[in-house]
Image (spheres, helix red, strand yellow):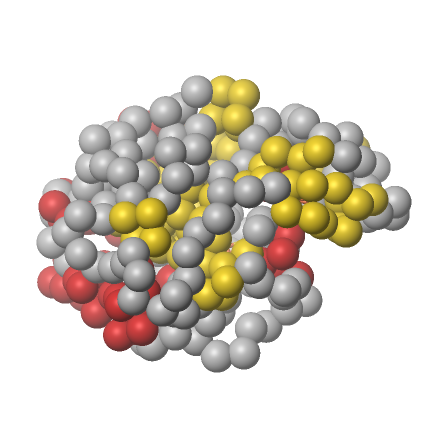
Length: 281
Ligand code: SF4
Ligand code: SF4
């Protein structure tokens, strides 16, 4: 397979191992219920595909989902990704931590970064908070770089902030993320492109991304909206000739963008003001 060199302007490599999840959050920040991809790459296919990526020291491949540990070859994939690629994991931590500790070398999921490499998403309405804290402390004691992220959903904000305080006292890195999108009639989040997800007035535009997003079947998408809607992919990480093109692409779906792509946020250096896509209307 030809190497896939990540452009300097890229800020994220998202590897959606599976869209399956063992929780049913009342709001799911991954809005994938409208699209179920056909097929999943096997562990061997993932390893072969991901190992062609040439990235930078400060740009890991982020293994995510759904819940990535539900991929049957989760540990094989983590343990066979080439050492030159750093690995981050986004998880709801519903896996068995003793198995994780037995199977994974903490040094493999660790790098110099201003945030943890294993990032646990906290969903108070679905998770046993005490159990989550126990598991995080166990992984932390075993040497893993791990932290918790809680979304400040209007209905859960108080709980998240309370648990954040408790976690901080216990020595756990617990950070919060703003809730994105509409709750009732109120729009939450800070966005660069007004109307990008009003879902009513679709416009044509040109759009350039700073993220390599790979779906469970290996297909590569322009943005999160495309991933979750199952729109036509722009390539496949599993196609031997695939080469990444850092270009503006035509899009007919401005108005159906995903808040994740157009919110103003911090980049990988934790500098504020970044958006994942650049749109020309
Ligand atoms: S844990 Fe994440 S992916 Fe799973 S249902 Fe909750 S928000 Fe969705
Ligand atoms: S305009 Fe919106 S939907 Fe179209 S590619 Fe860009 S982020 Fe995705």
